[in-house]
Image 1 (cartoon, helix red, strand yellow):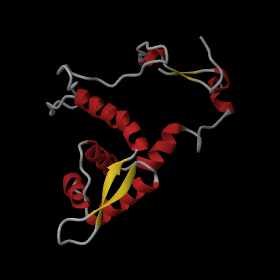
Image 2 (cartoon, one colour; image 1 turned 60 degrees about the horizontal axis):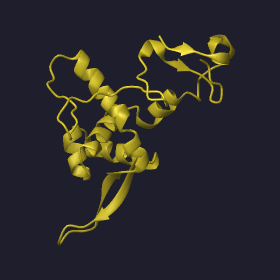
Image 3 (cartoon, one colour; image 1 turned 90 degrees about the vertical axis):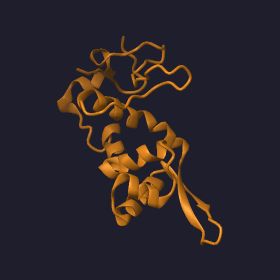
Length: 158
């Protein structure tokens, strides 16, 4: 269990509604199709039709999700033009979108661990070893879930 520290420990004295980072993140990418579009962007997909096909959603839903992800700053539009065709936009990860990658990979790892029908694994290209998503503190220590705490910034508890 995660420990709430300082003034957060009294759960009845504050409300996370509207201020919680989980809530705000879900507001940006809280649909299945948005998460799958982000997955596809990490796999290198950039074209509208490819997103629609690979995620398995309608063109209207693809358009809505891509617009939301562009507005949120996770993807950016870049024009491209095939020879003899009109100019179109492709969708590329922004710095903010790339920083979102551990969220998607954490979901990948959780799903891999709890659903038996997948043989997919994350691995380190450099050496081939399996890779995992984990929480580390600023001092470099691995932080298991039973040692994780939430506190108000600027108040360090030990």
